[in-house]
Image (cartoon, rainbow, N blue to C red):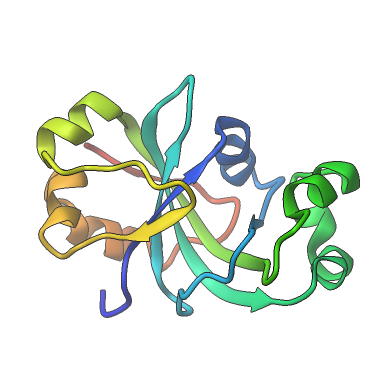
Length: 162
């Protein structure tokens, strides 16, 4: 995995929507420095509070909110009012188009993430994961993560034992 791996925080309903294929684009208030092919681990916020999903980035598009809605709206799992409310005041919102999705077989709970990596911090939006942190968080299964996510297609869920 030559691309940087990121950790994104999402609401549980959006993690579910990515897994069931009703969401194929993640919206962020600020541009994300992610390359095509980058892997993002998704942390579902409260009440789940666990690492639940990995996605492979297809592309990132930074544009005004109205332009993002016109191009990606139905793929965001947001209605127009939610979309507009979320992006109020955002200077450079972006759309992260998702190439593939993988569900972790067992969610990795926040307490376990902190046990595996003592300095684990849940990001407000997203952050990059250091090379020493990734194997700890994924239980040393980064090779399987890379192998399984590459051939997956959106809507096809791959499993990774944790």
